[in-house]
Image 1 (cartoon, rainbow, N blue to C red):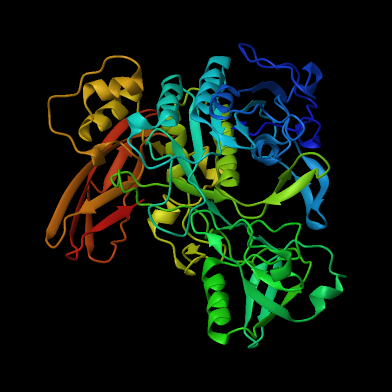
Image 2 (image 1 turned 180 degrees about the vertical axis):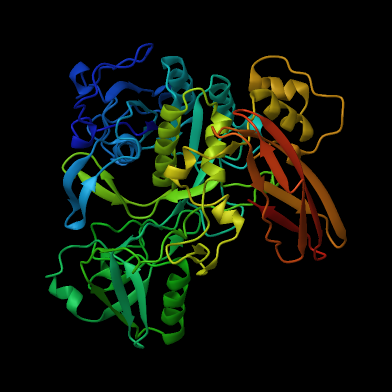
Length: 560
């Protein structure tokens, strides 16, 4: 886990029945403020911290009255993500009565190594890259990093370079898509060797309602528990607070007490401990329109129920509004995110006096996928990162708990591949995917050659000299488990892509039959239509022809 550190006393990190660290583990438990050798155990087998990048970018030293110069965190984020990946089962857990039950990570028997590279003032490439390289040297199987990355050339992306070094050593690398949705082309961690995860909801909800002065009512969610607060029983003036468009955070000074006292304010993110309701972006825009159209005399009331609703009463999964979306402006030939996983209102361990908390973000969805990767690695220890990623993608599903296509919470219409990726992860199906799309590091080098990177540029990534093939290539020819096809503007467009699959099942004479659902305006032809496998690890290839006409402005058609 490369994050903000860890709170080792959490019950989620108990090591009952785990024993000593695995043979060959080279990690260490570094000592620092409020973190000694006893902070590690059979669950937390490694803990390090990195601050040289922080130190070089900040003239003042780390303020040790506010944060710990050690693997211990004060933020809570790192503990939350770590326990989501591999937390032990802890019964009787809730967030002030919400989501009561047993807290358990995706891979509760997995060991954890935490690398603190994120501080109060942010994360710096020098520290995160150093943490990534140290994790590989220590002998981890999975790296999970809940930090975004810009849409930049891979050779300028230090984390993508370090991630390539990880997969060369057989380490699966999982990262967040980002929280800049619902706008298109907002995601990061675009390299095809990185598993990039968007966020979805789960079938658990905390319903609450906003009632406007015009009697319109909108549903949202709230985990505010002080329902005896008399202020909440009446209508109050409603005001809109300016926000930073890139982060949806309040502009400094906009919460002037003289302006917001005894009023309902729109909008603050992650309002878990506040008397507040979270609504979708679409709902928020409707509330803002009400404020603007009515003038100064606008009111609202909050109907906070204090309920936890579980099951089919709540349609799930739905793509979270904040989840970053594709397509990539720089690399539209690769469909990102790769998949979605639970990232909305996730209950997991926290830090300090708040032992468990509910958080939302692609940090949480990345952690779920990382835990699933650990389960796959345990069952299939010889699989490389590409095979694990393929298993997660091809076993994913695209329908919700009402057997309808997964919706995008921004529009409440069927989600297209740009927020959805290949689909929603399914841990049970992923351990036995039947077929995998295998790749080795050389395949990614060939992919970079197809993007017209020079051999010198690619050597910056590989840290050794490379040679590009002397035949024509296209970026979409990478043996990726999904397709993203860029159609030419204003003309008939035909593109043919080739893929090779490896049979990882155990049965003999197994036949796979293709099923195609043509998108609007595009015809897909797969040849051959059946693939037959006689033995384990046998390979077979097929081609997919995309035929279509698109508008004069051009479109990108993507198919998972």
